[in-house]
Structures are given as C-alpha cells and as structure tokens.
Length: 580
Image (cartoon, rainbow, N blue to C red):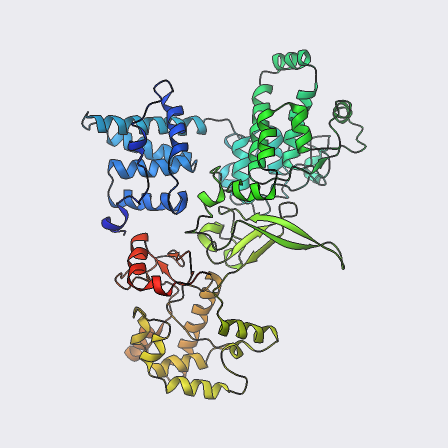
C-alpha cells in the first residue's frame, strides 16, 4: 500500500481544482466554467496518466477533499466519464452531512459541475447502448480482428466497425474502437457474404473512415440551401447525424488520419452514386470534401494538422482523452520511444516506400506473444518494454526496442550480427564453457554481485555461488541471473525466470536433494520476475511484473513511487544516470 507521505501530497507546479475555482467567469454555466478552467490548468510534470495514477493512490491512502478533487480533475481531463461520474457521485453522497463553510461549498460546486459534465457526455446517443447491433463495449473488447469485422449498415454492406461509426456519426463508438486498436485509415474492401443480404449497396472501395464522414457532410453541403432545409424538416434526426459526422471527421484528423486520400466512386450505377457524382463529390480528397461541405471548423483543423511537424506536435493520443500524446500516454515518465516512427514498407522485390506511423493505442489488445487469449491492454503489458507502431492503412505492426549502448555492448552486438553464439557477446570464442564457469566459481560472490548492484539491494547476496553456477550450467542457452532486471523486456524476463527455475529443479534432482534441504535450496535460489524498488531505503517489491515505472532518462532502474525516485536521485543515481 502507498505511504501517506509519498502520494498524499501534491506535485510542484500543480494548481489544485479548488484554486482554479476562485476566479471569475460568473456569466458562464458551472459545466462550461469548469471546462474553460480545465483548459487553463497547468500540465502535470509527468503527464495526465501519471497524475491520475498518483491521485488514485492518494485517495486510497487518504480520502480527503483535496485528493478527491485532484483525481476527479484527472478523470475529467482524460475524459474518463464513467470513473468521474462514479467518483463524484460517491463523494457528493459522503459529503451530504458536512459543514457549510466556503471551502466545502467550493468543493461541492466543483464536484457537481464535473458530475454534470460526465453525465452529459455519457448521455450522448451511441449504438453501443442499443440491442441488435452486437457492438456492446464488453463484446468490442473481445474482438481481435477489429479492422476486418464487417458491420451491418442500412445502405452499405462492406463497412468495418470504424467506417460504420464514421458514416453513422457515432463519436462514442468511433473513439472506443480507435482506443481498442482500430486502424484509422483502413480502406473499404470487399463485402462479406453474411452482410450482402443486409444492404444492396457498396461503399466506394478504398475509402477511409475520414472520407466517408466528409462525403456525408459534402453531400448535404453541395445541395441548394432550400432543398437542404426541406430535408432537415422531413428528417429531424438528420441534423444530429451530420453533427456526429462533423465531430467524427474532426477527431479523425486530430488522431492523424490521412487527409490526402481520394474519394473515388468509380463506375457505380446506383442512384446514390450518380447523385453524388452530379454534386461533384468524386475524385476529391478529404480537404476538398470539407470545403464542399462548408465546414469551417473542419477545414481549420485540417490546416492546423497539415505539416508533418505540426502533426507530430499536436496529434492526439488514441486512448480517447483528446490530449496530445506528450500530455497523455507518451509523457516522458511513461514512453520508451517517440509516438511516431518511419518504417520501410515493401512494395515489390525491388521497391520500398517510407511510411509514417503512429504508436499503437495504449488501450488496444497487446500484440505480444504472451497476451494470446488474455485481452490485456498494451499499456498494462509491454508499453515500457517496446514501442509498438502500426501502419494506419494496412494494420501492419512493427516495434522498436531501446537500450543504453556503451562501447563494449556495441562491439558485442557487432559480433552477434556476424553470426556468433549468444555467449560470445561477453566472452571470446577461445573460452570454453568449462573455463567460463570455473572462473565464476573462483570469483567471490560479493564482488560478483556488486558489479550490477552498487547500492546493495540484491537478494543474491544470500545465494550460494556453487549452486548459482551449477544452475547456469544446466541452462540450454545459459545466462547470468540478476534479480535487478529492470531493463529486461517483460516477455524475455518471464521466459528467463521460467528457464532458471526449471534448471534449479533439475539441479536438485541431479544432487538427489530431498526434504527440508531441497525446500531450503529452492526457497533461497528461486528466480522471481518481481523487481524491488531501486531506492535502497525502500523495501517495496512489485506486485505485478513490470508494474514499477522506469527512470525515463536511462531506463535502467525502476521505482515504486516518484518520492523514491527523487530520494535515489539525490543519493546516487544523479551521478550514474546516462540518457538512452
């Protein structure tokens, strides 16, 4: 459990929700007042995700007004409306019998405003809350191939869920699907057999979700105003649907969608296609369609995100927070690599093209091998071990891993590239395993451990060197076990732990150890994937594998809290920390 002294206090430079409520804006409603003030709040040092986690720990430690407001503020900024409503409801209920002083009034006023804002956002109509579509949130979370699942539509029979949300104007469904890992520029393809019966028409092949939303807006923007007004009178829900199309298009642009893709109707003989061709809605890119639709807000957003530099700086995180990556899940405290990358996509045997990609959604189902069938989010699984990127038009994954490289490691890596074995990275080829293990046995245990543990926090000091080396000898591809395994990727760490413990059991069998003696050897020398806090003054261990946050600068150590990180920085880490 978190200690009060570590997590119950505010970080420097942060303005509390109570303080932001003391200024004017008397003419605005409480909800709009709250939204305006939220925009003016100073960005927490480590981003809003870290701020939310720290505030949650503070509330768990001490449920007072300041901590509750801090957590509610983070929920509001991250647009986590369900959690905000639950927190505000319980806090207002608990506070019903409290004193009526000015501080309590401000507290209730702020919580009430946030509670209303959460309820207003949750009341926005979405197909996820309707029966018959099979798009309930619980079902969406368990769909692995979310880009290729065809969704039944009244007009088109070849839309995936994201394209369906964009053309329906369902912003909540659209943001939820993107948060779960949908590719935002995935092109419309062949209709699925099971959906051909649902609708007779096909959406234009190659159209993206952004093009579909923009084409809907352009179709009604291109008709004469009198005709448009008549349509709105005859179809009362049309205006709401078009507002949804506009919001979907704006958010797709802010998430990094490709605005230069072209909407091509082809040789379609359907009446709707012929009408759209007559209105000039053919062979147009998203920007041109936005101009036809006469949507100033959309064209202004597209201009703001036009250059690559602006997109890198402003593009939104895919979790649904509508915050730039650097303020959300890619803050310096959390991200291993940048939120964008280039990779070479193979066109044919001779040609490749450089593709610009964004980082995979933190809330999407982690693509790693250890997550098969578990439906664990990327952020809770491999987020800090590897930067996973995705091609937004094909759905192709690729990842980059980062590690500190010194001269010795670089030379070892060069040897590995030349085809040497895994243990030639450290030892010359002339040295046999017999000589290597003999050298380990002759080395004092304390000196051996101190090489990787200058702060003296390793549990290996209690191990027997003979048993340690004997277990190494029984590993198929041997390695040196180190319990301070913060830099190791999660998947590799789990595999190493499993291999070490199997080799330990093999050693006990070979030595014919039984009873209490066997139990004692296993108890002392078993490898654990749970790491200690790097602060030597702290005795905390991870509860879940890789749950501690790494130092954002060197990635070599990890801490249970920011307070421990600060203490260790002052103590020794400042002199040893080298940027990745």
